[in-house]
Amino acid sequence: MEKFKSDISGKEFPGNEKVAATMVRQPIYEVIKQDNPDFDDSCHLSVTELNQYREKYITEFLQRELGELSETEAKVVESLKNKTLLADDPEDDDAKSTFGQRVADRVASFGGSWTFIIIFVAILAGWIAGNVFLLSNKGFDPYPFILLNLILSCVAALQAPVIMMSQNRQGEKDREKAQNDYMINLKSELEIRMLHEKIDHLVMHQEQSLIEIQKIQTEMMNDILQKIEKKV
Image (cartoon, rainbow, N blue to C red; front, side, top):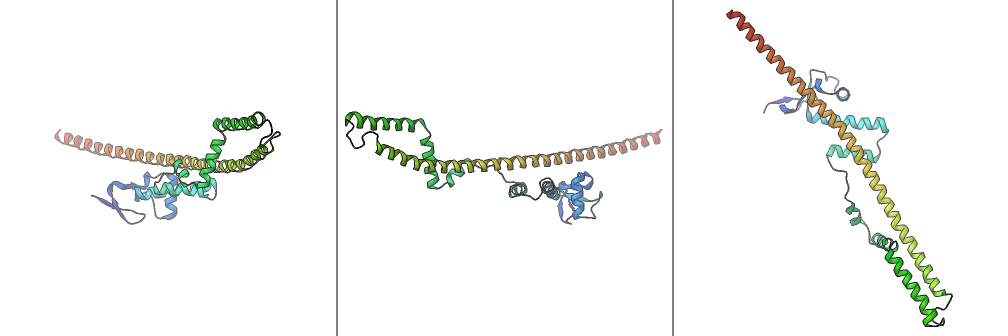
């Protein structure tokens, strides 16, 4: 396979990765020029090197637009370089949760259901009916049901912080999902920008190939015309 030497790194690459400097878009050309002052329109580089400078251009673009890159933007740039996914599996969060967090989620889920309300109302009705009618208000908890009020207060005192724990954890999960959505959207936008760069590169390469073909056809026509003139 034919190879060529890059004018940037001096390394050899396959011929199908050869890219002329004239086919590099101006913003990326300027980034290359900063690191390689001798790089001009007569030079060549590889597609791999061009992609590296595209990523560098994106990083510098983010720094200009957003200032110092936050941990979130740094993750996006790192994901672009390593070609990894940012989407998280929601089941992973449940697998990492502690026993206490899982109990809090179950309690909050059950405490906010109609099943809990119906069971709770049935217990209250049975408690009141048993003490008032069956035990003639002389049972273990006569009216005004002081023991029942104590039990209800204890249940409320325990249930409230457990539900708050579950809500705080759900809020944290929502924030993480929102941050993950932001990173995915940012990465998609940058990948679309890179895709435009690659499409422009292909279009320019195709145009250059067509121009070369036209030159060859013109030379062939000139040769044919010269042969005809000689015969005449």
